[in-house]
Image (cartoon, rainbow, N blue to C red; front, side):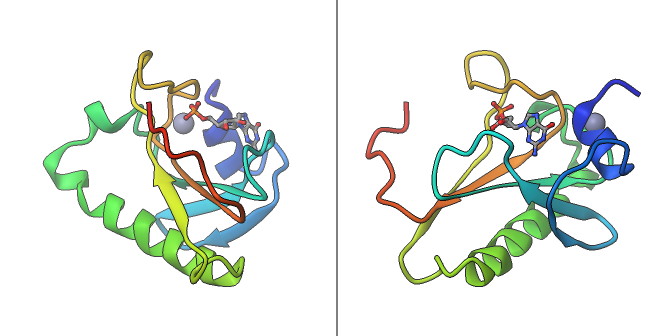
Length: 113
Ligand code: 5GP
Ligand code: ZN
């Protein structure tokens, strides 16, 4: 098993797990870009948004729901936050396991790309 995020799901690589249900897991980013920087992933290995089948679409809703709950827990629900999914090389995706970034706790850059 080479995928780093699959290894986190399996508990083989330590991480600060902040949320977990049967389909989704969330942990703190190892190299935070903002005071709050969490990673939300499906437990199943899906390489990227491009690989998402129609049957797998509901996982995105579950990830957004987890992110909204985590934003409340982290105290940034009112101040605001950003959810980002990078896809592919030019989209800036480095880890080939679908993931959503939850960023907040400061005024984020106005630039998206
Ligand atoms: P990407 O650039 O693929 O959208 O984002 C991957 C993110 O995963 C990066 O922000 C990076 O810091 C984070 N990351 C990579 N490896 C690990 C790890 O082993 N543990 C944790 N907690 N985060 C990681
Ligand atoms: Zn994986």
